[in-house]
Structures are given as C-alpha cells and as structure tokens.
Image 1 (cartoon, one colour):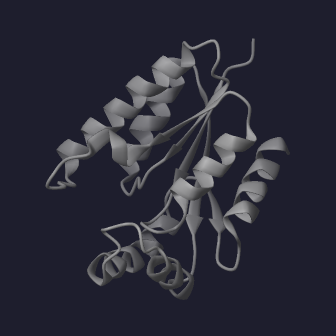
Image 2 (image 1 turned 120 degrees about the horizontal axis):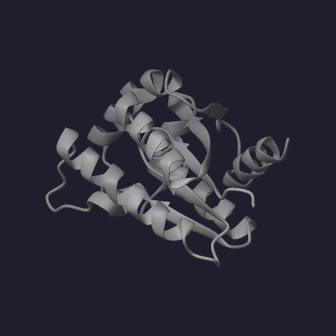
Length: 169
C-alpha cells in the first residue's frame, strides 16, 4: 500500500499558504488541511522556540491521526516554518509516522507581497509593521527546504495548479 503524502506549504506571512492550501485540499479527494497557526493560537501571540516546538508537536499529532484515518488520503500543512530545525523536526516526524513528504516554499517580490497584504481587509494582523517583518524574511525563506514557487503575478489557482503539476511529474 502506498504511503499517504503530506504537502508542506512554507513561506512568509502573506505569501498565500492558507489560500493555496485550501485550494489544494479541495482539488484532492480525501485531503485534510492543517493551518499551523491553529496549533499555537495563543493570546497574546508568542512566537518563540517553545511555542514553535509546541506547534510542530501538535501538527505531528494531527498528522498521525489523519494517517490512521481510512477516509484521509493526504494532508496539506500551511505554516510559516522559518527555522531549519522546525522543518527538520516536521520532516523527521512525518517519516516516523510513515508519511511521504513534499515541500513547497511560496515566495514573491516585495511589491507582490505588499499588494496582497494591503488587499486582505479581513486579517487583523495585516499591519504595516508585520508587513515589514514579512518583507525582511523573504531572503531567508528562499534558502529553506522545499521547491521554491515564485507566486508573483500568479493567482492562487495558478499556484495550486503549478504545485499539483509538480506532484504529478
């Protein structure tokens, strides 16, 4: 029997991970979706090594549950995984569970990121301060594991199609 696959979508805040992840989920029968932000939803938000490890552990726990579910054929995880050690922990943990992995890092130009950011009127943390943080992180994300996908000038549907094509090759 073929192992189930987990598709990790990485990238800076505002790159489109959640939107693209949901589109992939809807395109693949029996696909679950995990938004890594759900796995460390603290008020006030604390983003440090302890809470990142907590979120990674929660993601792996959910992956194990989905792997044991006969109705689930795969999982998409969308999360800002900005540390190599977090990527490694998730990769190794998924392998221990028996999941195949595919990693994609969504990237874009500063201009594209800013336009998306300012177009999102629903997300309360889309502040100018957070946009500056996200822009500063673009270079670091380009060095992290995963197939880089430059989403500049692409719709979310085009990004989904690009990823699905890559997976079928």
